[in-house]
Amino acid sequence: MNIPNVPKPATPEFTDKIIVQLQDILKAKLSWLNYSFGRAQRLVRKQDGRNFYFPSVHLGAGEYLEVLPTDRFKNFSFFTLEDPQEVDFKAHQFGRIKTNYSLIIWVNLETIFEGSEERNSEAVKAEILKVLTRETFLTSGRITVESIYEKAESIYEGFSLKEIDSQFLMQPFAGFRFEGELTFFETC
Image 1 (cartoon, rainbow, N blue to C red):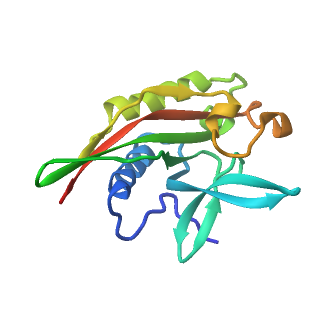
Image 2 (tube, rainbow, N blue to C red):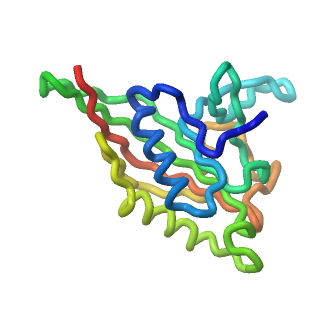
């Protein structure tokens, strides 16, 4: 399967219009980001007799790609959106839609700091925060960052991943979950 570095829907609508802009910004501003995925869905499958919940990005034509912690994609990002999406149509022509989002970023630090043996995840976190807060200009919305998580149980919150099973945050790997609010405007 040929996976584009920035897979996007052909005709983005509603929240996807903002997310595709963010995908492009992240890919352009974070030189080490190999894949900038869009909105992931929470899918489920049976594993060892239990439900296993995992994030998956739709690539088109019914194809899905799991975006679990792995070295397969080197450094990647994806979004999740929370329920509910608040809608305010008081302005008759334009409606304001607000939703809480998460941006999950998974990295292999050796690919970012080639030759370094230090765990410099704080530099990566600072660079991502700078892009989101100072270098992101959206055409019809805004994004805020309210929290950053880096504990294993918080990064993939809502999915069936356990650090004790895989130790997926050991050097050279690191992950972050940036949370905040996504606001955009739609016409009635």
